[in-house]
Length: 64
Image 1 (cartoon, helix red, strand yellow):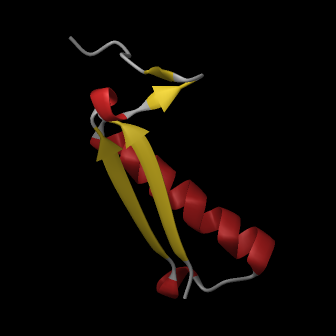
Image 2 (cartoon, one colour; image 1 turned 180 degrees about the horizontal axis):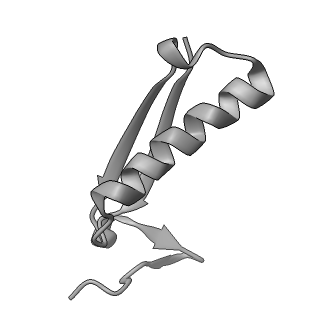
Image 3 (cartoon, one colour; image 1 turned 90 degrees about the vertical axis):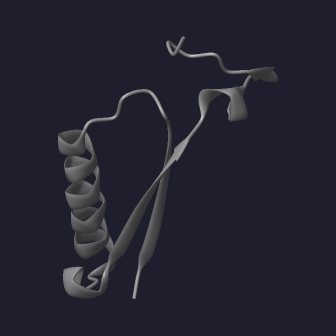
């Protein structure tokens, strides 16, 4: 039973984008690992941008 956890910053990710991420990640483990999509779980965590860092610095993104 694959479990895929996708973390993104909380910068207005749409429901359609989430749907595409879930479908794409599921298809990837089907194609690469030959896993059953019916038992593949995908969770998307939206992380507040103030809790995200890159290159040693707090990421501020486009959120105001």
